Image 1 (cartoon, rainbow, N blue to C red):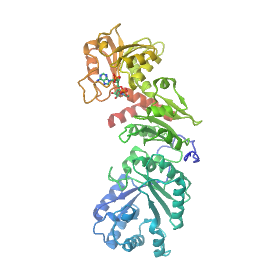
Image 2 (image 1 turned 45 degrees about the vertical axis):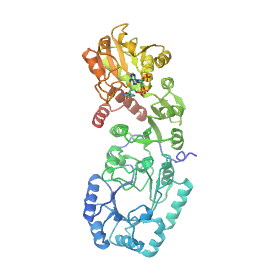
Image 3 (image 1 turned 90 degrees about the horizontal axis):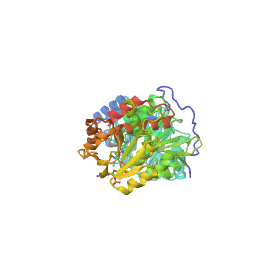
Length: 531
Ligand code: NAP
């Protein structure tokens, strides 16, 4: 079943008015300290960071004296307060008498808290005890937490109906993600909710629910004051919500992009694309997407608003198999690194790795006076590719595409032969490359992992062979200056860093995602800051 496919979302209005807030979704900072003083410090920090309200977790306080502590907390808090006193039976810390707990919540209401969280299991009791004597200003959030999984759409719908039947002002449903597709059911409920609703899917696989709640109209999302100090797994920090994911700029029309991989937590790509989208006022977001099954992911998030993906390990081949159409070179390489959903819904696959590497090499040649009358300065050149793995294939096909004469040199000769025959080139072993110099001014590209950190003193080709090359490119980018490139410079060759391949493929992807020219300097600066 396609869960998101039927959600009616406007797809126009791609560029956003500079800086305008596009949704009313609030950022709520959980405050979990052992003393009132520490809590107040945290509330001030939350305000400084840009949160809209704080959730005071009374169950974390040691020696809690309700009247005195609540008076101070509510009166001195610089932001609106949501008071939660979470019992152990709902995943919290409080293990005491239930009457005392509810009495404290009622007291918080009387003392002027803005929101009170009451668990569904006791919501009817709670409403009975207040008997309609709820101060006008207070809104009651009736909450349900599931720490095991995310139920079916029908079951969540029934749960929401039960919450509404209690008289809740705001519905809160927090579930747990077993798979990234679980968030889709919460989005479906959020977008159709007639009352304010908080819908969160906890855990790393539910991360997108926390960011996209702004797109699907959630009442609030939680953002931690300190990165990693969270009240539930998968919670982003306030800083990341605002600075990395441009939370205030997200709205119903925001186009969703991301990098599909597993693991994906440490990907630098969101740091690259989100500031770039913002800088050109493009109404898009780029998320880390921890995907287990690519086909399921694509089928579930089939709405026209989920539009562009980068693919990384181990999903480049799975992505390839899910495309409706594939760029001819990506087809020959057998792997994609970028996927775009076209307006007709068809998924188009590209291998931008080769575009990035070839563009970097061409740039290096042009910057040093090569003109390439026929279009590419690589045309007609003898282009030696060391390595026949994923990057080797991309470079060899890219070289062929630009009209170069390709030689594949690989440790395992059979692989060199197979790739060379596909690109109409010649194959040799890496060992034989040392004495291979049919002409001067050749171009060399290293795509083996020889020389990569930590073995930075290794090199795939002896220095004495480098004098026959006019340009040497190394796909390795850790370290930036490999031994191969250092020795190539000493031999007088033009050198092109592996980081240039990464940057250039990012330019290409940015343009495919947004349809706008890439803010190249900004992308370079962002990458320099994040590596
Ligand atoms: P891969 O598919 O695993 O291929 C590895 C290649 O290195 C194979 O040709 C392998 O030869 C060769 N090799 C490995 N160890 C060797 C050794 N000790 N001596 C000689 N040859 C050796 O890897 P890949 O995805 O192509 O990546 C290769 C490199 O490119 C990595 O350093 C990666 O970080 C880099 N890369 C950079 C970018 C970028 O944006 N700059 C993008 C992609 C990849 P055999 O066939 O004989 O095993």
